[in-house]
Amino acid sequence: MTKDTEKGASRRDFLKLAGTAAPAAVVAATLTPTKASAEVNLDSQTMQDTAHTRAYLASARF
Image 1 (cartoon, rainbow, N blue to C red):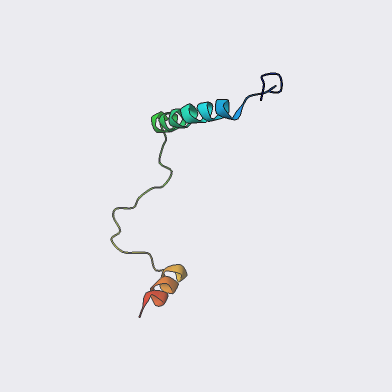
Image 2 (cartoon, one colour):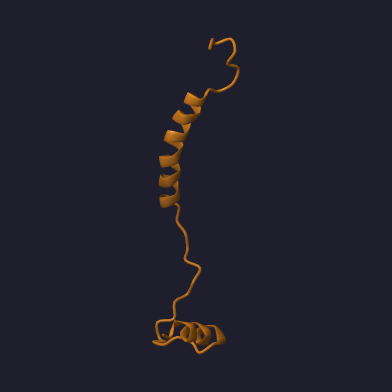
C-alpha cells in the first residue's frame, strides 16, 4: 500500500493513540475529586425491616 492511497489516519496511528490515551484517562479519573453521594448510618446495627429484606431473607433460607 502506498502513501497515495492513505488519506486519513492509519490503524497504527489509532493504536498508538489508544495506547497512550487509556493510561491518561485512568490518571485523570483517579485525580478528579469526587464527593460520596451515599450516607452511611453507623448508629443502626441491623437491617431495616422492609418487604424487600423480608423477601431476601425468605429466599436465602434452606
